Structure formats: structure tokens, C-alpha cells
Amino acid sequence: MSAKSCELRTVMVMNISSTSREVAISVRNLVVDYKNLRAVNNISFDAKAGEVTVVIGPNGAGKTSTMEVCSGVRAATSGAVSILGFDPKKDRGKLNSHIGVMLQDGGVYPSARVFEIAQHYCNLYDNRTNADELVESVDLTRQKKTSWRKLSGGEKQRLSLALALAAKPRVAFLDEPTSGVDIFGRDLIRNIVRQLAADGCAVIMATHELDEAQRVADHVLMFQSGQLLANAPMTELQDATGQRQTLEDIFRHLAEKSKLQGEQ
Amino acid sequence: MRIYRSQLRQELTVMIRNGEQLLLLVVIPVMLLVFFSQTDFLPTENENKIDFLLPGILSLAVISTAMVSLGIATGFERSYGVLRRLGTTPLGTRRLVAAKISAICVIEIAQLVILTVVGLLLGWNPSRINLPQILLFLILGTGCFAGIGLTLAGRLRAEVNLAAQNGLYLVFLLLGGIFVDSDELPATLSPISAFSPSSLLSSLLRDSFSNTVVLADAIVLCGWAIAACALAVTSFKWSD
Image 1 (cartoon, rainbow over the protein chains, first blue to last red):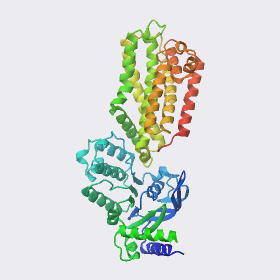
Image 2: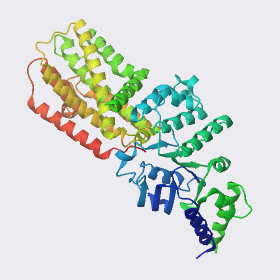
Image 3: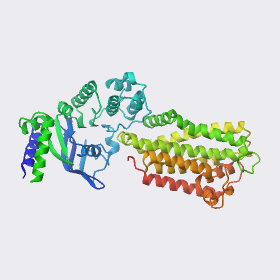
Image 4: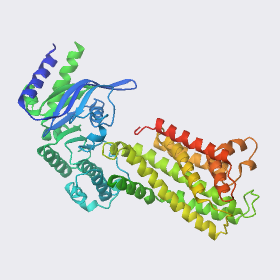
């Protein structure tokens, strides 16, 4: 067994023993292939209710593909995925009432106005979410009548997050929620994400922004070239990698180590 | 029903809010109806040009709503990720499709009323109106053109789809028996035009206003509708 897998196994074992929270997302041996590319290569992980699991890694590492399979947007090539006990593709009808999804590209009609689209998404769920409160929760009350195409990048991100919240989700998939968001918007989004977890939601959040990831993460999935470099609770990951404190340092350390082992 | 109604409201709002959509759906058909009924450009043997024109313009209205408007909007919804995102909600495919079809029907009914009123003002005087028959052909035409529009929208990139839908609209407009009867076209184009769904729909509507329906035309249009819808269902991709 290589030193890397030894280290990761240790981290994973610590993870399993350190918490008894309910597993909301279970992924086993997931493979996602595109035409000539293996985007995700045989990965397995769990994500728990009441925790924020951040998914980090460089562009093309397999983060979005994994999120898309878990949220039922994309079919897996092989492997088993269970979200709240449901297959995200086959049981989509049952599962969709319980998940909130924020896609990387927004997914909103450009001419739709803030309140109108929030109201529409509230109507799609049977949970009496109030559209006024939803819009207010992401600080867009003043932009209620503004169309999506006229919103700034940060405002679009906040609205997109609000639409995911309309579900009052038990599992939330957030793809790059803080991308292009200013400092105040980040504070707001971070608070919402933490509150979601505090309410018992399993939050799985993909991001490139490692400082942001570090601030919200309970658990970290590090991707590189379609594989998992690490799968561990944030604190234990920091301990397992010695004195390195920031996620960026930890990622560089593990990526470098993986590269060296690959060359040997 | 709440979810369906909300999606229908959203579809109609987005459709009506687009200025170019209103131009395509209402202004262009009305302008063409008024212009060609008041001028002598059309090689029609009908004494009353409006009797020939109005059924063709109704076909054009169906093409603009069911094919162009639906097809372009759906193409961009795919491209913007709207469909992908809605796919993660409890909306479901059946309610989405039902809302889209209902939105088309609402717009078509509005077009039918507006064009009929304008036609009557321009002196349209049909010898007979078989409303159930007309509605049946409008439904068949809607199914056929919606199938064609969604087939293109479900496979092509949004910008290519936009060009394809508009190009096809122009082909149907000029060669689809709407303004010029298929028999009046050059010999090489005439049989193709006669077999086209726009030509079939136009002539079936004309027949419905004069008590002479060719059953074979209705069967062929029905075949077009089934084939186009089947193609759309089997080939449609929800995201790029």
C-alpha cells in the first residue's frame, strides 16, 4: 500500500469513528465518462446531515460532474449513488422535493424578475416557503422587480442560492456559490450555508475558493484528475497533514505528494 | 395543479414579455394579412383574396407559435440551463410539457381571435365554418410544428437553432402554400410544397371554410404530426 493511500485511509477511518451523524449522501465507486474523457474515476464518499461538505480541486477535476450525478442532472457511467436513500436518477420524482440545487450557470430565464422567479420556485414545492422572506433572506428586496439579466454577478449568485433554498432542502448541492460575489455577499452566503447545516441539511458545496471553503467546511473532498486526493473532516485533515493550516497548503501538499508518487 | 399553473404563468409571462415574440406572433401575421389583402401581388384566382389569405395566415400563426416561438425559447432554455435546473425540482417532465402546450394553446387562441376579427373587418365572408373540424386541424398542425420546433431545439446549439427556426419559417412562408398555392409554384417545387405540413394545413383550413375537405390531406398531416412528435420525444436532449 502506498504512503498516500495509507495516509488517506487513516484520515477516512478517523472520519468514520469521529461522528455518528446520519449519512445523507452515499457514493460508491462512481465513474463518469464523457466521449473520450474519464471525468470521475472510481470515487467513493459519504456526506452527512448537519454538515457542510466542501468539494475542492482544480478545473476539470470532476467536482461538477460528481455534483451533477448526485443531484440527478447527469447519469453515472457506473457506480452507486444514494441520496436520502433514493437513486437520484431513477427516484427523481420522489427525491426532488427534498433537494435544493444551485447550478454553476444559474439556470434562470434571463427576462424573469427576482420576485417572480422566487414566487415560481416557492410554488414548485409543497412547503409554504414565503417568496418575500426568501428574497429578503438573500438581501434582494430592493431588486424584486429587476430581471435576472440586469442583476450583477453577485446578485445572480444570491438569487440562485435563494431558489435552492425554496425547497427547504434536506440536501443542498451548491456549485460555486461564492464565485463573483463581493465580501458582504460572501458573508451572507456563508451564514446561510452554516444555518442550513445547523438546521440538519447535508450541504455539499463545490468551490475554487479555498479560503472560503476553509471557513465553512466540516468535511473536505479534494479532487484531482477525477480522483479523490482526500476525504476527511476539516480538522482531522489539518492534523493529518502536519503543521499546514490552510486548505490551500494542504491541497498543494497532497497534490505534490500524489504527483511524486505517480512519477515513481 | 398549483405547480402546473405556476409553470404555465411563467411560460406565458416570459413569452409575452419578449417584444420580438409579439412581433412574430401577432404583428407580422396581421401586417401580412392586411398588406396582401389590399394589394394585387398574389397570383390567386379567388375573387375575394381574403378568403384565400386568412386560412394561410392562420397556418402561419400556428407555425410562428408552435414551431418558431416554442422552439427558440426551448433552445435558449436548454442553453441557459433553465431546463436542467427545473429538472431538479418537483415540476417533472409531464407538467413542464403540459404547461408549454397550454401556453401555446392560449397564444394560438388569441391569434385566432385577432386574425378572425381583422379578417372580418377586411371583408372575409366564409361560406361555412366547421369549428370542430377547424380546431382538429389546428391541433394537428400544432402537434406537427411543435414536434419540428422541439426536434431542432432539442439537438442544436441555441444560436444555430435560432437561425434554423427562422430559416424554416421563411421556407414555409414562401413555399408552404400560405400565400401562393402549391399548384402555382414551379414544377420542381410544386409537389414538395403540396406535401409540406404548412401547405396541407393551409389547404385543409381553406377547405374547412368551403365545405370540401380532402381526407387524404388530413391523413398525411396526421402522419406528419405523429412523426414530428415521435422524433422530438426520441431525440430531445434536456441540456447541451
